[in-house]
Image 1 (cartoon, rainbow, N blue to C red):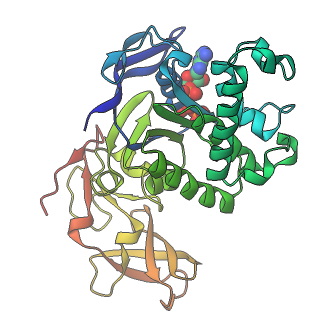
Image 2 (image 1 turned 180 degrees about the vertical axis):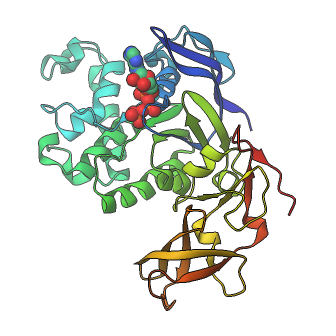
Length: 356
Ligand SMILES: Nc1ncnc2c1ncn2[C@@H]1O[C@H](COP(=O)(O)OP(=O)(O)OP(=O)(O)O)[C@@H](O)[C@H]1O
């Protein structure tokens, strides 16, 4: 499938700071990509460059195979949704959603409520806009709220209006910058599936910025992990989880923070560093690792054990919910499958192919 968007060796320099360093990202037609990374790694800058709201200092941006470096955001026909919603407080839901269409299809005079109907063509455009707004609002469950002002809406409803405004203009690409970060945890999960549903329904490419790896794993078919202005790894969620290209990606991807073990922590790994996820390590009397129990968090379906190796390394392991937790201070044996061990170069952090 072809690429709808490409960043090729994009660099962005602010003063003497290189914020993006030869970033290359390919976005397939119809795909859902998340840009994932810690605060300040350059996610928003990348998105703004894709949108045409900022220009690269070097490199190229291609939309549908053509360089668009000279095109404005408007000319690119990409839609952008921000975490702050960016709604107009004095306009109703219907007017907010309609805005991109009124800007495009009605002249200044045509936008004036009464005079507008006297402008040739304006009433037809107005009917088209009303129909499109109605359809979009229905699709997003906003049909009952069209006459409200943003101040009378919940956070989730505001975000839906922002999505509606992006959707109504039929853009070639959706760019979303942490759209859910102002919502509470439960609403985030619900909006997450609504956005996924919207993606499936439109069939358009979505590019979604987040620092929340769960969100990235749940929604994306491609995750681009950015660290310090560079692409650390790009791939399917499963690929990143199962074969992280380096230590930093391993630390960033996965619900439970990965353990890093060294020679002397009970495994023979020479000079390298071993990554072992807590969910791949559990109490096992025949296990080869040994560590002292310090804490246990009961989470219902599982128990997260906090332990320490003889060498002093912190280790987390996961036991099933019905595990009988021994007293703190007990020495526990832990088992893991060698297949689950990730080996990294101690100096560069790059993934080493495991012998196992
Ligand atoms: N206009 C600007 N002038 C100077 N520095 C900037 C400018 N815009 C962004 N930066 C810097 O570039 C770096 C990357 O910013 P960016 O907003 O892309 O990060 P981010 O990964 O989206 O972070 P966050 O998750 O906090 O939004 C930051 O260190 C930021 O301070």
